[in-house]
Length: 289
Image (cartoon, rainbow, N blue to C red; front, side, top):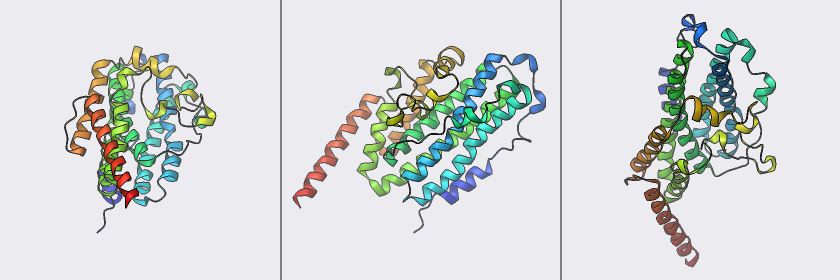
């Protein structure tokens, strides 16, 4: 039985793919509605999106035995790099002095340490949910019509990417069982506890290379490493209400995935501990056999 998801995901994403020339209303640009501060945030988002390049290299390396998932990553990589490109094209047309240099783009391409594939999958699922909400807020904050449209467009892409990752998470449950649940629950607890941390919990803001610490996050390699917190707190106003939307969506999807209801990160953490005990018990029994 063929259980590959890539063919179906390819067609579903292809069916809603937007065209940069035809689907972005470039002719509606309102010059007086774009400030230099806003243009700079677009530049930072473009560079952040460019980091799909090292993430793809990580995915292909750590999922070498999963050709189905690696094939899907070809689509994900294309669409994420397209996000970087459309933001840079916007700047090229209307604020060319803010277009990232090749050196600034290349700065976010660095090796990620190997990591457990299932935990990484869950991390990026949560990252897509979070980015969808960030871009929705960015679309509200911006006053210029074209960039509002661009952020709305790429936010929908991020939501679809999250849905695709969720499909691979469901597939992993059928092949890895409790081990997959444990990995997803572990990262889920971390991502659903974001309000307790001092920094935004997104893959581009997490440490990924021990030898390069502390310059081993994507955000630390931007021209302005402190940009992200300022963008979220002072500009797009990503407050506790919006953070709760992200957390609730993570918990909702894990509830559906596991067939249990999780209203809080604490409930999910309790289940994570149950899973850990079950896995340990199974491991002990295996040793006795």
